[in-house]
Every structure is written in structure tokens, then in C-alpha cells.
Image (tube, rainbow, N blue to C red; front, side, top):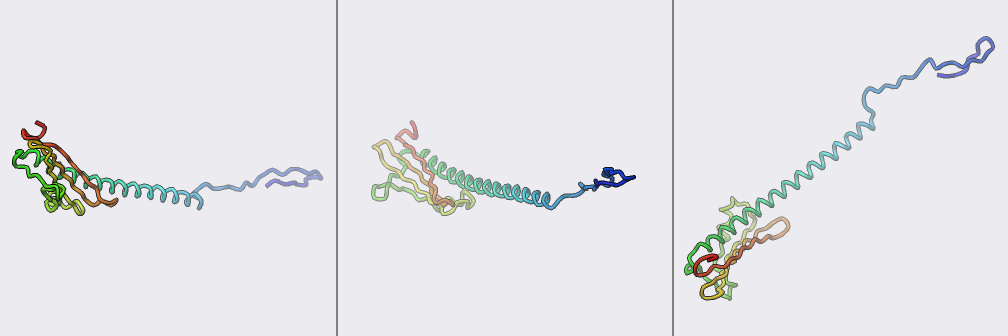
Length: 158
């Protein structure tokens, strides 16, 4: 403490002999609360990112499974001989096959409410248009995968 001291009739300035020692050991409550706040923000962000990555991965897996089934069905029709490809009629939109019941066993029941159809439309006496669709339920609504190809008398693309 500083102050004045009377010594032999003279006023003298008293030096600061007793210093208050501030300790820096430990943490203050404010530092602890701030650290806790930052930790909660980081943890919440990590959990949010993990959830989004998991949902995106699941949607991608579903899309790839559906794509694989639809592509396999298209290849099945493209490799048939031209005369063995059934041709649909205009009254039912040229639908020739509903393969919905065969989808989930192929993809280990990954798809919700899958619906698959094959349409074959005659373009001429030696050319048919094949369209394969597969629709499944996603969290954002229905998703549809569609393949189309033409097959002529000599085979696909020949």
C-alpha cells in the first residue's frame, strides 16, 4: 500500500511494501463456461454432420440398388432375340411386365415400396422401343429411375 508517513517532522512517501499477490492457479468460472460452450458447439456440429452423412449414404445406397435392378432388367430385354420380345398394346401404355415383386429380394429389402414396369412399343416391323422404370419411396417422395433403348431385328444397336 502506498501512503504518507510522518517521520521526524517530515512527510515521507511510504513505499508499497505489501503487494497483493494475484494467483493464476486454476480457472475462473467464466473460462470454464466458455470452454463448456465451445465444447457443446463442436459436439453439436459433429453430431449434425454425422446424421447428414448417414442419411446421404442411405439415400445413395437405395439409388444404387434401384439403378442396378433397373439396368439388369434393361439388359435382360436387350439380350433377348427380337422375336421373343413381347410388344405391348396401346390400351395399357404398352406395358409388358410388372416386375415389382422381384425387386426387393434382389436388393436385400433395401427399397421402400418398389414398383417396376417394362414397356415395349413397336416403332416399325423391325424396331421396338423398350422402356424400363423403377419407382421407390424416398424420404422426399417417390424417386424414379428409367432406362430406354431401341432393339432392332439384328439386336440392340446393330
